[in-house]
Length: 138
Image 1 (cartoon, rainbow, N blue to C red):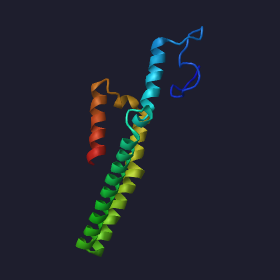
Image 2: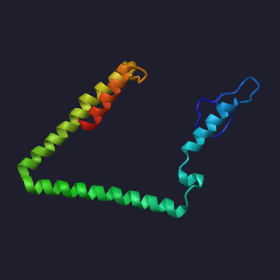
Image 3: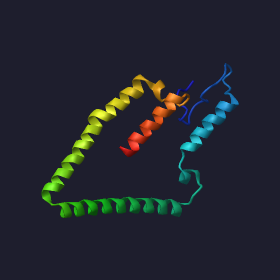
């Protein structure tokens, strides 16, 4: 038996003693494989639309980068050298604190006590929502 449902070669993921797979398992594996293909690979969209989507995505990405660059330059010009250096130092310290303290604590909590974030009970739903709010707004 294979252990990976995502590979496209070989027999179905689950098979009985005669080597015939369960129909539902075969449908499940086929659905997984189909869902991993991009719309372009499935033939749902044409080559022109695929390229247009890529161009629009990259233009939007570069436009956001340009706006953020100009915003940083504007802040630097408005606040002066000392205030800008202090702001950049604070940003770097905040990022370091996130990487060194907060992320490891979250990983340890998720690894050591996954039951706390199980959404089948009230405590798990509450803690999952709190974690989401903290990650998004803090």
